[in-house]
Length: 386
Image (cartoon, rainbow, N blue to C red):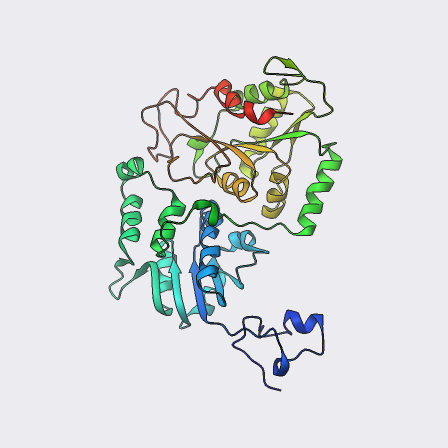
């Protein structure tokens, strides 16, 4: 039997999906045969939020290269982000990057300035290269003017503050895509049926109905960016404003079966923070989602929300991918780099020193402390229609 190994559906160690559906289908007579016209490697290792928003390049790539095979190399803990993505043929964890050495691709796309990502580019052959790669002397080469501009931004905080382009705009220009409407290149996260079931069971456990208005709160800063964190006491004050919004909105008494529920999100490092918030609020409408969920479970629970209030973190990009309304808070990082896809509001700290990209500072009150809970609540006010 002759196997058409250049078919986009061919798998090296098992039958393809069409043979699985019908054992009578073989390569010899298969009507679904599609030869690969472009073999593309994307390298984007980290951070998690950056890997998520970089998925916005997938749809334009597939539109341009119809029968392309896209392989994505990323950090081991980021692989789940790409799970169930219809545009990605293969996900390779960084721990197995050696499998790619001396491989040939039609197109290499490296959008990562991490030195580990750059060094990998030296071991891969490609007819076309986009983004960043190393030359023989290990100097970083930028593929075009847009890549040069992003490289400059990455090494100059003053330029970062002045920048008006979104990350998505930059990476599209690096790939040669111009004048694309952001709505045409969304961030892509596809939940599986099992993940949707997980969220449904969580909702049932905590008496969250389809009629409820669900507000997510994700205002921690994570490990690396503590200054993105919104203060505990102000977070508690914000939640109290939200849970006390009913039964009166905008001065009108509301007669509705719809109720407000607030889901509190956080990672492993924010467990104590969230416990304190729950204690300060002391209201059954506030539900702690826990800090030990898997990455995909975290995505599933965000999908329960009608609106998410978040700092500039992973959850922001996940919510946008899931088409949720978002209110995003910005202090040390650039609000201009964030593409909101028409789904929400940005709140930028009134401090003059914002977009400093400092991970620590001694300014009191700092940028995030200077955003009042009332301002945030007023931003989500319009989402609280019943």
